[in-house]
Length: 415
Image (cartoon, rainbow, N blue to C red; front, side):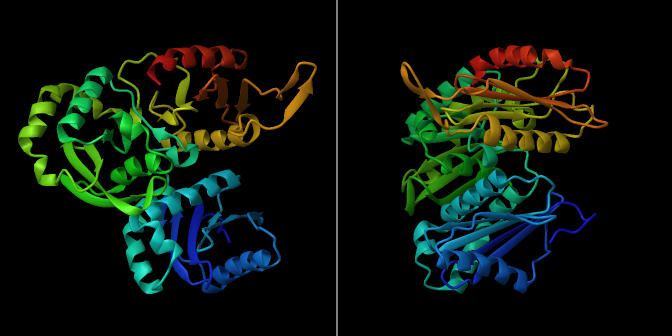
């Protein structure tokens, strides 16, 4: 199913579970959307083998061929999603989480009722077109990582307390509890109400805003896959500066016209310089001048309880590997440690004289890539925080844990 030399290809199939009718097929090659489609015979075979297993009370979750990894997932006995990837070493975890995000995106745009009670297939196909841009972003090489970690992508602004105070005041003035400030799809600051949003909408809403074409203001109807899958809310967005948007999740009020220029000027014009300072935080994530060791080529910091993460491959941008390679290395390393060393499920327990306690869990692990590259990856978990680092070859292996520990302690006050 893969094509040698054509670049890594990802296919996504969406079918009505009861009839097997394809609702859409999206593909990407080398991280970019492509018009390449799978033959109908292949689509039929992939769906047929899944349905055959279900009829025998066998749940088919994944399979591998010489060059392709396939994952199936059914939702509400109504929608079947199938992902195929020709990328070498692709994990089932990555594709399974992608399918969950894709279904969440479908609910976000059209609502759960339309997906679980399909009355008109052709109409549903047309409605789902509005979700293509968001869905395609999960198939490509995104600068974000929340689709994989299931944590909200965040940045650390240099004047975070001032922005947070202003955001809270603005939210109170507009009578809206769910307000956030986003830069390039990442959260700069948010109200307590916004942080209480469940999964997957906490990840999907910033991702949606980051995937939409630039616009001065929007009034966008959305369903919340966890909190309100059948009743739509309104997502209002206001562009303060290019790539920097104010987002409000609300009901019938306020209207977009009520968010007049005078209200915005009152709260945000005095913060023009701090807001400008946020623009460079998109890919960099950390404030300019934040002290990082010279060997660090990329990092991923996760707060496992708050479900927030900071992800950047910007340090030492002029060195190899490229930012795209760095993101791929860190994403692949995350899937490795999440499935092998630091699973979200605490796993088995062991009996002792004092009773039952969790089995021993590792604190750190590392990986040295080769031959010919020597890039190093290290993961360290302390309490509720997990840190992954990509390091240059000259970083001594015996010092990886010490470097990671020092970096984690310096980042801990930020997240």
